[in-house]
Image 1: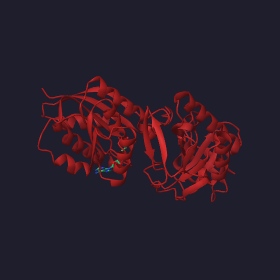
Image 2: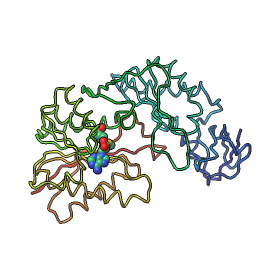
Image 3: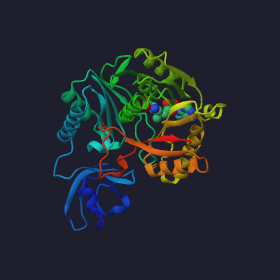
Image 4: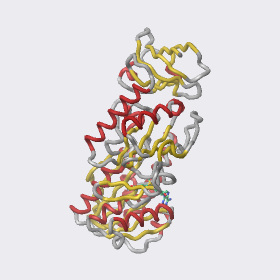
Length: 392
Ligand SMILES: C[S@@+](CC[C@H](N)C(=O)[O-])C[C@H]1O[C@@H](n2cnc3c(N)ncnc32)[C@H](O)[C@@H]1O
């Protein structure tokens, strides 16, 4: 057991449910500090603040799991997972969602996506990795899945050297898996696909994209960085003809399957190309009624924000000429460090002296199965700014 005492003034956020104690916030530390293990956290005047795990290898010295005097282990994890499940069951009719979203469900480092009877799991830090067997038991007890698959092959943090295992943890996993989202069917490759096979976090943005396409009778759509074509399918179901662009042949193959499964393959064209090359190749202007930009997260650190802004500026400057007057531009960022304010700055700088005006239609965020906890600012990572484009 490790006992840590925080510097004065650092207790408020922990009492408020914030899970991380950073190393420079420690006033004192006692116990076996060479090993990872349970830690009790105290304020500078020795008030008990909570219990968590000490990590000797990380700048995030303690991960606080409870503010109560609870034992860390199966019962606590089971309580958290039952609560996460109840929340999703109230929100969604179909069993396809992110079931556990780390800090957002007070289980930092644990990510679980639910594909019906199959769970796909990531253990993203040492602590949850050490409890892997306990979590598998809890999943079996609470959800009776037919299979649990581990996809811990994510990009690693610099200070958290952990195993990057992939494979079956329990039961069996069908070769072909499906997701049902807002009435559309998607094939997901949980073994090899990006993330755990499907980007569940864009559910609300796709739903907005579908409704605005129908409402404004948008007829020509462009889905840039399309992955498996989820935005394109939502535009197509609302009556648009769409082009998907992605550099990955495998992802576009998945898009083709999705289009066929939904009977929308006659409305969508797939283009394998780099988005910047594709945008540079247009000779005609004003071709599209709606363009959606959903690039991967390229900004991992604050110092990269200026590069991120330039990257988005290139994308927006390349997209505006091909959107017709009265059309729509959707700009998404899944980087915590790029805020809505940054996207607004991008828009302002991209339209300087162009005579083009962009006005707000909506802001959509990560869907509610990826909880944004107000007490944990970094839990808001995905934002999409939807703008009306006027050229007169
Ligand atoms: C965040 S995912 C898109 C998710 C998708 N919009 C959805 O709703 O499921 C980003 C995609 O961009 C693709 N990509 C990354 N860089 C690219 C580039 N320079 N040109 C084309 N595609 C790119 C990746 O292959 C990946 O499929």
